[in-house]
Length: 389
Ligand code: NIG
Ligand code: FE
Image (tube, rainbow, N blue to C red):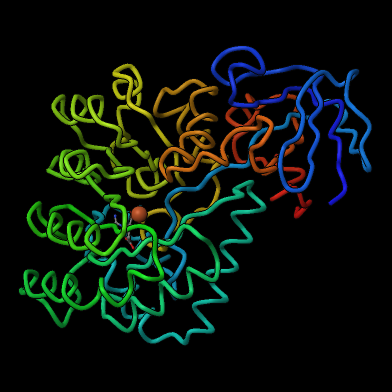
């Protein structure tokens, strides 16, 4: 594979403190060499080695590609009317998920695949070079199986969201649904997934039900992650830490004991401010989490109910404005934080040896991601060293 040098980078975020200033390892007037899908060299633009091809970035900022660690891309239909009613005052409840379950069950494999790929392309154009993808809108063995199979054709980061909400045929029988998930669904679907997820929330699944699902997933080789503490305080965060989950996601309603548990464990807190924005929920207390030393990731949580956006730049802007994260913290959470949430050590930074997942902005620094909300600043994207946008 030919080598490529990216030169005249205005601000380079490496996420490697050994390569530059501060925790983001920032360098100015930098260059970066890509070789065979990996970063081969980082340094001053004037000292860049010769390469087969060159791209003069003319002062643009360069960052690691965003790592989207929370996305629901396998579904059919939308819920624009539910969103509109919510903006007029109707509260969000987990029941809306059943609307999408009905549409997803009625859709063909091809329709689901086309929709997932459309959203994946949209994510890529917004700078996400790795995207996790959950099932969760089937909630039968057959519909979850095809959901994880479709997701597995889109990404290596497939999550079986086996227990999202009790489906209508199990109304009033959530325990029976959980038994079916543990005994039938997880054994059938686990070969296509890396992660097991559950929605631990009032109106979805309680602590014991969530624990049963996650434990069954672990027994089939899956690693847990949890939707927890989105709408109410509850057991999700502490259950995630107790089971050694890679991440607990939402974390919008927590108490001191939850924060202390996260600080004492190695579960990443993945904040999804797009969902709080679109449901008028309270935003997470990111400052308390960060100040306690918790590793924080940012995700867009693309789904048709609570957050129909694929844009991590939008979430970075929300994280800075509404969650009071600094622009550096927000950019770190959308890159290195996402990689930590997916337990990946090959992405999320631009040190030599890391995958050449790289984005260039139509802006001189990463600060502009929060400073210029709503402006499509992603000008070029390389994935595995190949220019794809
Ligand atoms: O991450 N919280 C649970 N799941 C999704 C929402 C699902 C839906 O409303 O369709 C979320 O917000
Ligand atoms: Fe979600």
